[in-house]
Amino acid sequence: MNARFTSSSAAIELVGLTKRYAPGAKPAVDSINLRIASGSYCCLLGPSGCGKSTTLRMVAGHETVTEGDVLLENRNITDLPAAARGTAMMFQSFALFPHLSALDNVAFSLKMKGMAKDERLAQARSLLDRVAMGHLADRKPAELSGGQQQRVALARALITQPRVLLLDEPLSALDPFLRIQMRAELRRWQKELGLTFIHVTHSQEEAMALADTMVVMNHGVIEQSGSPHEVYNRPVNEFVARFMGGHNVIDTGAGKVGVRTDHIAVAPVAAGQEAGRAGPHAQWAVVSDVEYQGTYVLLGLQSPGLSHTAHSTAQWSVMLSESVFAAQPLKVGDVVRMSWLPEAEHPLAD
Ligand code: ADP
Ligand code: MG
Image 1: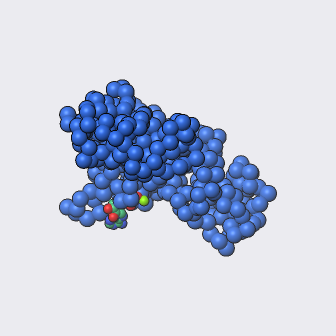
Image 2 (image 1 turned 90 degrees about the horizontal axis):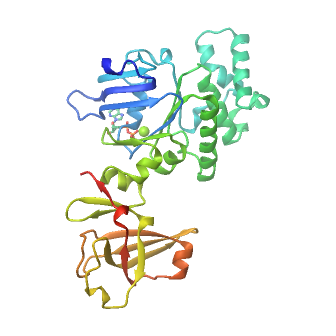
Image 3 (image 1 turned 180 degrees about the vertical axis):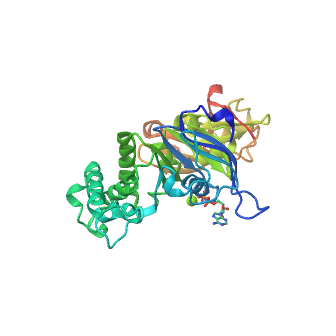
């Protein structure tokens, strides 16, 4: 354990945390360092297989650690059993026992601990009251709506009085409408309870909606962590820019820069006009796709084959507000000049 970190007030701290599933194998999680502030909502985000669940399971104590440490409020919990850590886990689709009532689902882990029936039911009832589910305590999961099931699952996780709640893709099996409702509710409960949540998701939209801090992972390492605003507006490298979406990655010849799709202006040009130089922060292109999205229109554009291309980037996307587009509609095949302000460019590391 690294002495440098012992005075921190982070809820969870990962220090050089590594997981290899087989000796000599490529690590699934490769020496990651992360501090998660107490009382914050942290999302671990990244493509499938990048090591999110492995990281979460090592925090939970459901997976052994190959190297490094997990600290909870400065206590080294790396080698503690799951039940002794001060963490609790909420699983995909809530994983409630279908044959048990809401009350018995919530009381279940206390029963496993051998707590007397009256006492465990009283504790479970008080937690169900806390999540406004006391009046439905006797219902089975199938008799509850998705939102009510989520509250029961939350109460069940909270009964062990965890300091940190761990959630592995809790919303991914829900239909899109319910998913958005449920994520708003998770966020509300997290603030109300003042607990630290660590939520694994592969959806950047979900992470941006929920997180105080989002941690973007790829191939077992952390590519970037920061507020959703920081990560979206200043992706540090091409991977983060492409994974977050909403950016063009432009090869300037002297390195790569990112420019947001809504920071590019598009003006139609007469045939033949694209023979000249478009300018340093501009590019000729042909509209290849027009997608109406309601409040905005998403244009796909292509630049290869046009003369005087300042940039070797071939595929572009530009987001125009509906009113801007309506003032000057474009169609597939139109030739345009795209331009952006120099300050719209931000450098991307390799
Ligand atoms: P994510 O949750 O980001 O999709 P995982 O943490 O589940 O990713 O997996 C990370 C890597 O570790 C993947 O390459 C996966 O195949 C591998 N992996 C996960 N669990 C096991 C396991 N129990 N045994 C061997 N390899 C595993
Ligand atoms: Mg996973």
